[in-house]
Image (cartoon, rainbow over all chains, first blue to last red; front, side, top):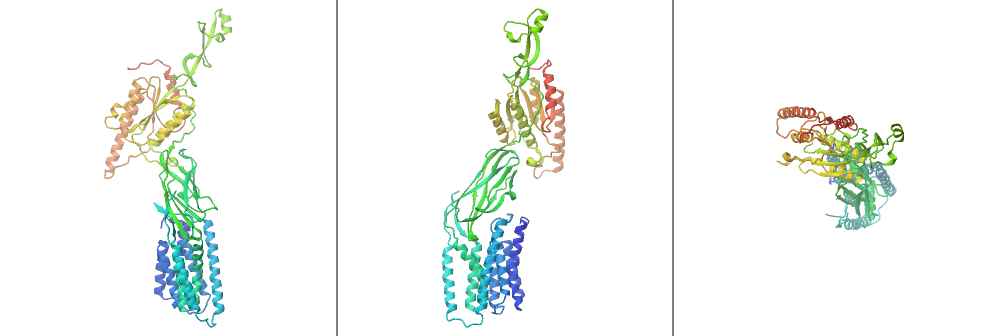
Length: 172
Length: 430
């Protein structure tokens, strides 16, 4: 910890705070999460801030997804955008920290680039929110969820194949 | 070591979180989960779209391969087949007495927008490994990472700094063939020596017509010849006392010794004098007498290669400096070793002009071996310093000047006195 640069420390703070804030955003819908879930999520996110390449960051974000799946009401509310923004901030901060060791200063150009990318992806989330709000309350077409699941499954299989590691001799 | 592109934890996280949120949302009929999943699916899709196809190669090179301490050079990284690379991270190995910029040798840059150069500056003479580093490359949208791979550094001989040294004192015994110093011999120089009667063999253009007309006999003007001088530098590298902070901090005894030797050699070689070097250590180097620019590099290179080591058992008693008659000997040492005192006294008794440059830093403390009693070590050090003072006093009594090195100009006054003394007749023991 004593080797962190100021920028690095700031990013790790965002990593630690993002998932708990995403969890607590449901309180805006009068549906606050239980204390044990907040503590568990905080524990995972703080662990992710210390060891950013571990699976603790993913665990923290999955906990948030799990809560939003069963906790708050199913209605479309702007609070979900707050949760999305918090998760995106934690994810992007983790990307920036992972570029090098803890004492590597944060590159300003990289920071600006990823801030712009995060904003763009939140616009995608906003568009999804608007679409969901537009069709809220309307009858669902038959088989829509099945088609959606099939599409997600195929995309997951393609992605799993695509991330397969290739090894080539090192040349330097 | 083999390496290649591998998916980053960030890509894995985006896929897992995005997939889990989308799947749960569809299973449970909750559009809010699709809103949470959208940014992560976007990250993952774009990272996969920019999956690298080429295997890059990296090469690092230094702008300069030979430096003086305090000088700097730039380490430049070249990435070949790097079209898929968005970001590069370089982490240079931390090496003692080597400063880096930026940020202690760590840099993160976006390739193509800003150079990933690192400035390197060795802060102390000697053999340094410069440029060893680890390099990692990241693809667009941080989906894949290549490395980190290690690029080994290269050993560099860092030459001691040579501060400008402008002594005007003449060396005591210029005896070489041709040089810049006024010799005691009469010859074809430019400095007036005297007027004497014409002798067969004298050049006609040397005739002094005024004196000849006044006396009625032909007289000629004589001048002093200009010759170079021989200098032997004896460097004591048997130990290094004190702490070295490089060029920016305090100097150890070996720092003072090497830098003083470099300054004196530089000054003498600039004047056209011949300089020889003898390093007294376990693996002592020897550079025969010579002059010129190449010889200067040879002397500085030998000084830069010095590593302190004790003299081999038995060798100390047979220490031979091979100083020829007429050579001036400058012995640079902290004078804590008995052998150096003995060597200096032997040179003085042989009739050689000898000068001792004391390079023990003021306030130097010995390194106490682990487990040794600090009080006993401190007492032993004080006793050793008392013996050293006695030894220096005895050398001075025998006519060997001892002067503490304080930078350029230290030797001016001493050399003047030695030059004046050299003109006087002297008895020596053979």
